[in-house]
Length: 348
Image 1: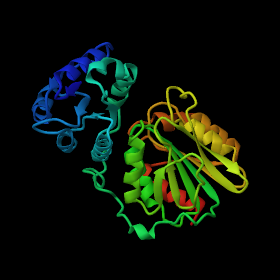
Image 2: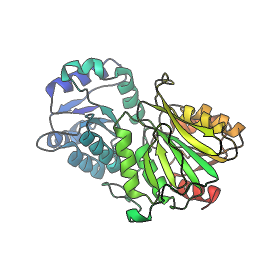
Image 3: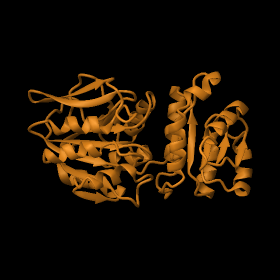
């Protein structure tokens, strides 16, 4: 384990947290990206935590070098600002596996960092699948953006299907390979739970919107689902869909987290399972844990079609594996085939 951060205090706190677990060994510390790149071939770490904002060589430039030269999983340390969220999304596109929020107050760093979650992420990420797709490494999109005027307008309401997607670790890059494939006249509305804190989901929605033919945005409480639109659950809110006459309405709430997660894919998918007069498609993509497994069982009971990402294309196979183990998954596909299958299933 190599910890890279320009703050000596944060380096020490993260080192102390990780060394609580006997399975994790911190082999080195670095003050900036240049120093980290000098130490990597000597220390050969299994995982790297990498601060984004550093002098001499920042985290983004350092990450590009790591992705190009090594197959070492990287977890970014990100500040909770608009700029920090945007840079984090950029890092995830380049090839970082996951990220951890940096504390707002450096003096409360040891209490604000969720120690168990950080340790769990380190362990899972150390075993992650790091097959970086050259088509999107370096932050390059697979699909070109259409002109804004060509996007689906909000007054186009009629659709016959709802696609519910759940994902976590590796999800932002996975979604970038799925959502931009969807044509603007898709005969569906899409709802997504991506495990991310507040602010980061907005940056994700904005980024996907610039790359996609359909409209992508954060879901808002009380808004009506529209054809050719994709709604991402805001960080720290559960998102569900309810039915009002012939309309399908987004609901946000702050009910207790499910297994520490808010938003939770289970909440979204269970709500979709209860909708009438609509075709339903449930999809579980890469992610740690088992969120979505209960939800797809309920969707399957309601005659939904269920797809899971295959192990080979997952960064972390946890969520798809849990879904597959329920026996409710109809089709297991590599990531690059899922967008096409959505189109085949719901039509345009």
